[in-house]
Amino acid sequence: MRIDLHSHSTASDGTKAPAEVVEHAAAAGIDVLALTDHDSADGWAEAAEAARRVDVALVPGIEISTKHNGAGVHLLAYLPDVSYPPLSAELDLILAGREGRLTSIIAQLRLAGLDITEAEVLQQVGRSPAIGRPHIADVMVAKGWVRDRAEAFDRWLNTGRPGYVVRYATPTADMIALVAAAGGVSVIAHPWGRASRGVLDAEALAGFARAGLVGVEVDHQDHSAADRRALRALAGDLGLVVTGSSDYHGDGKVDHDLGCNLTARDELERLLAAAADTAAAAHRSVPEVVRR
Ligand code: AMP
Ligand code: MN
Ligand code: MN
Ligand code: MN
Image 1 (cartoon, helix red, strand yellow):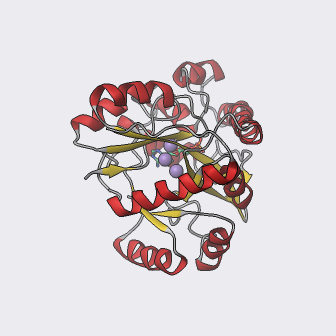
Image 2 (cartoon, helix red, strand yellow):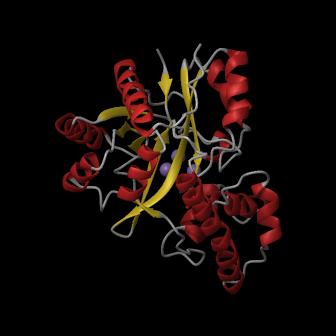
């Protein structure tokens, strides 16, 4: 059984529409897919419709922007009720932070001498409610300034580069509690990827486990084999679910093809059982998993 629990569509910074991501998953032999766009559930309905059509099981999720000790931590929230007002208000705040940041990034890039406008980026953003640096990178690629998104980040958009601007993110522990109150379950995405590695040591993960964290994404392209072994052991000690995922972005990220990392069936069952418990305790009507 091939289970991939982290993917992006044009509802954030992926390059394929939600239905196309699901169709691509079916073609790639994926049995269970989670669509986890940044800070938004906008792609869920289209993905669910496609999942019913092409016989893929779909788990609705969101990759939420949080921060811990000053570093960005991406939190995968599976099956939350996004109509729960405190959660939707917080997601709106994060999305507004992305919008405000764009103006500042463009100002800084123009100061650095680049002829780029907010309108050009918004054209690239299209229907995505989450305005991301990848959209700016795509404009740079179209103008022929850089080869790909990676080079745009290296030269202009990463921390310490001319176009870097901080944006609002919710404290991680607060968001774990908010997701649980909305009937969902939280899994930390790529904990030892570049941004969060420095702040997510064993002690921090133990604290989040006490705050209600359900799992950690162990098998991810940002993690070395040694990272994966150490994280898996840590997850075992803390009783956390272990997931593995592609973090697929369509053509936006190389070496992140659907199914390149997978989640074990038992781990998915634990995750879904935890979600059922959380939903019952929260008295929320959570979105359905599209079953095959
Ligand atoms: P933002 O959401 O605007 O903070 O931008 C972060 C997003 O940019 C991540 O979710 C990745 O999808 C993407 N990203 C970050 N670094 C790179 C890179 N080197 N190459 C391609 N995409 C990247
Ligand atoms: Mn992304
Ligand atoms: Mn991420
Ligand atoms: Mn992601």
